[in-house]
Image 1: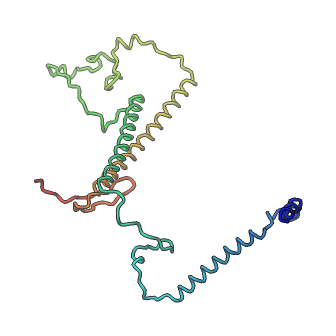
Image 2: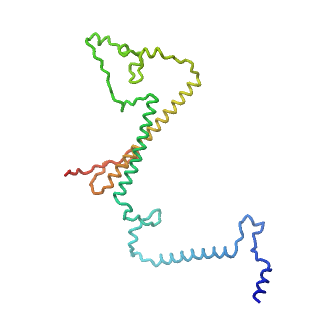
Image 3: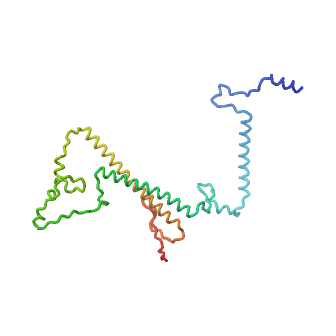
Length: 254
């Protein structure tokens, strides 16, 4: 009999759920019983949670104390757990990580300084603050020679090139040069545009080097502050363009 019952079921028409009518297709899929049941259970669960919390709030003793209250803090009206007091890394590990980051920043700053120097040399710029103030002293025998001294004649160059510290060509080499006067306006515009781009790049790299220098100073200060045994006094607050300034207590060397 069981086999006949199974055989009769095999020929039966398969059950199909009613689909959403075409006129209500804009409302999405038609909700089935399992969907309604899942939604209702979720709603009842949330309602029960709210009731339980309300009952707990009504029965709360205003004088009660839990140690967890000390370990939590309120941020934007929400209680959150404070970070664990126990450090994840040791002091030696933190110093090593800081030193690695500091080496990377130092490497990037050195790279920027080299690029700035190359751009300055290509644009024939000399930084008066960093360039050495050298003097070329010429010795003569009499006061008459001092009054009649001609630097251009002495160095054998053109008077307009006397004050140059580099590329001060002699008159003989200047005579051998062929002057190029066949540059048109397009070439001049192209050269001036390229020069302007290099100047803009130089300004950006100088600013980037300054920012890296500030970051390097701040990282160095953070590394020094990791040693909490040494007593120090804060003299200046940290800003966007400078690191904080501390004064450490002098320790006598043994």
